[in-house]
Length: 144
Image (cartoon, rainbow, N blue to C red; front, side, top):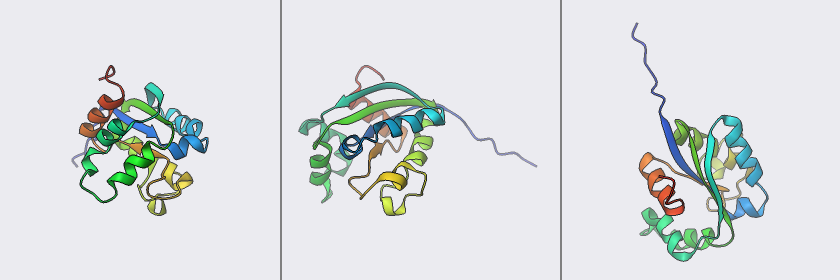
């Protein structure tokens, strides 16, 4: 019988604790979950996102009706930006974060446990290697 080999790759990804997560005091919980999972946080900083950066961050949504609300929300308070590294970091982080819509996020995920609505959903996580590279470069030009 042929065995299917799962390819483990070292990756870097971007994760941001959004203003609602910071304001609600959930930063320690998010960081703790990442560390307990065995991923490494190789860069971390608190950021007050300005308008230009917010527009860059959500550039892929620029033509969507909810773009302005995303930009306004991400600028509404301090955020915590992180670069996470580990085997399959992107897919593992995405599974830890849960579905964007908290009503569809599984219990045990960050959004399933803490998020209130589709915009105020505690965290943002890169969804692909390309997004991770782009988002890391926005916040950490010296890490890539």
